[in-house]
Each structure stands twice: as C-alpha cells, then as structure tokens.
Length: 291
Figure (cartoon, one colour):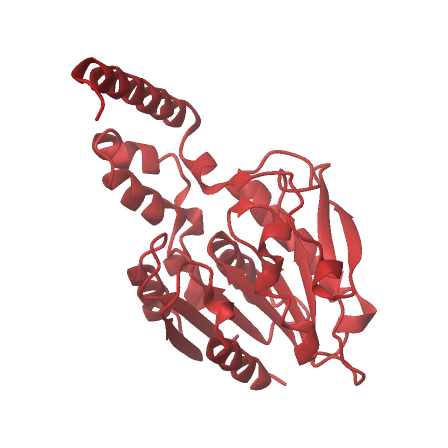
C-alpha cells in the first residue's frame, strides 16, 4: 500500500492532469472528445481472405481520404452494397472485422477513414467528418457495381451518428439513388447529449457540463434528424450491456424515428454485435426486405 505522502503526490498529479484536460476542453470545446484516431495498421482485408482495393478520395476542402472497397465473394451478382462508417477510435483497420462477414453473404462493402484517421489527411472534427462521409457516399453511388442495386448504410457508434445526419440530408434533398436501409449499431442519440452525459459523470467537469456541451453545435442531434430518414427503413441496434453508450440512447433514437423502423436489443459489449451469428442473421433479414 502506498504511503500517505505518495498518495498525496499521486492525488496532486491526478488533479493537475485533470485540470489540464479541463482547460483544454474550455479552450477547444468538446468536439475533439469524439475523435481518437491513430495511424497504426491493425489488420488488412487480405489477412481475412477478402479481396479488396485501396481507394483514395479528394475532398472539396483539400483533404485526401483513404478507404477500402471489398467486393462480394459470390459467383452471382452482388445482392447490394453496404457503406460502413466506423466508430471513433483507432482507424478502419481496427474495425474491419465488424463487416468482414458481409462479402461472403453476397454484399459489397465500402468503408473510409475520416480525416485524421489511418492514411486520411487532416484533423478530425464533426463538420469535417460529415463532409467526409458524404464524399464517400457520392463516390460509392457512382461506381458501376452499385448501379441499380440496393444500397445500405451501416454505422457503429460515432459512425451511426454521422450516418443519421448524412442519410437525413440525402433523403430530404431527394438525392439519387435513395438508400434502401440504414442500420445504427451502438449509436449515441446526439453529440451534445452524450457530451453532457459524460461530463456529468466526472466531478471536475460536472459543474461545466452545460457550458462545455454548448460548444458543440446542436445541428447534429440524432433525435432531431432521424425522423428525416423516412421512408428509408431504419434498424436501431443497442446492447443492454453497452458500457460506452448506454442503452437509453438506442431507445431515444428508435422513439424519435418514423416508420418503417425496427429495434434489435442485443447483449454484447459495445461494438461487438457481429460476433453473434443470430445478430448477423437479423441484419441480413432486415436488408433482404429491401432487395
């Protein structure tokens, strides 16, 4: 057991570190807390026996995005394509296992790293990431392999939050082609809402939960946008054991969505949905309704 002087020193160091974090948040706002990118390569699709192509996209504001195109692994034409938006940590190479099962089920997969992640240039923020996911979708719908075939968006955690705003705007502008379905897995119900919730949990940031959360624009709250997905079918997936994004967020999103909609209650850790075959089957059944 540490001595009393050692414990006091540890407490002072902890308080100093937390104070520096708070000062940073007060100076920069909260939007940075949604992004934890790195540039490491964790696994590439070939190690999972998947065919793939590297894709590099130029954004209108001068960034270069990196993505992977994974074609369906079936002899017959692909059933459709899935646009996958990953969560807020690491980069796409750490998340690829979440969709590696789809090509053998007959679906193409396209996924990108947001600016600042992996091989993508720039520094991440909410508006930049929203710009990136629209850039990726516009590339996808222009590809020969996606023409006249169903198109789905699968977003996990942060990716789902970005996907709600993207799909709502895409639908309301009557962009072509319309999406055939949106799957939201472990998604928080709003950027400002989750920031306030997390700040409320910590004694140092608790008094600042409202002023800090107000630094996040309220234009991107999922509960405000998800009704705009209709008539695109939406499936909300959330785990009762999600220790990162509490279950109530999935319920709030589902309640705010218009029909057609489905709710899949799961029982796995955060973003671990697709390790369970039954949950994969539920998603496949949802997508097959759009075929």
